[in-house]
Length: 77
Image (cartoon, rainbow, N blue to C red; front, side, top):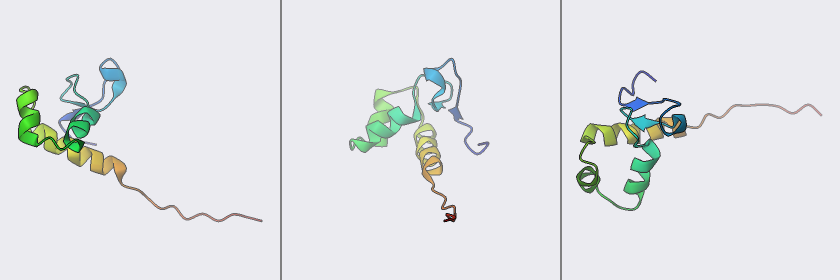
């Protein structure tokens, strides 16, 4: 996870959820806002302590977490 320098996990902050730079803003919060159609610029206006790179890294982190792996298995009958 070294490629995500702006994403932090701390059990004392938001229950250990993925947050932006140790703040109480989770990756999920950012993605939820974007999913409603808000632009990055509008999001940055609402959260002036965030930077554009924070939002972009949250998107990259979520994409990384959602990558699926297919694991072949067989069932013995």
